Length: 72
Image (tube, rainbow, N blue to C red; front, side):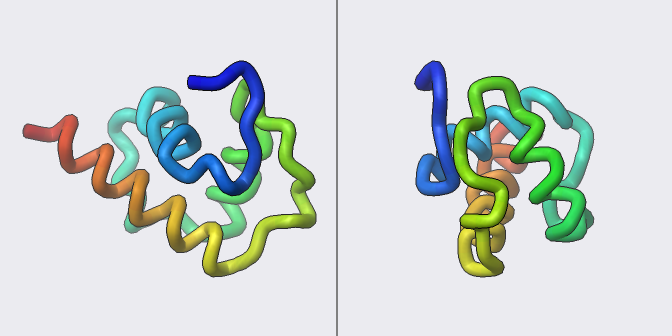
C-alpha cells in the first residue's frame, strides 16, 4: 500500500476497505457510505469531490473481489 493514494488507486482502496471492514459485504454498501469510508482511510489524499459513480462502482467491484477471495 502506498503511503498516500487517491481515487485512481482502485486496488489499494479495495484492499484497505477489506482490511477495515472484513465482515462487510461490499454489495450491500451504499455509495454515499462507501464514499465517506474511502475518504476516511488512512493515507487517502484524493479530493473528495473528485469521485463519481463510475469510480465508486469500480471500487465496489474490486472490493467485492477482494472480499470474496478472503472468504475462501
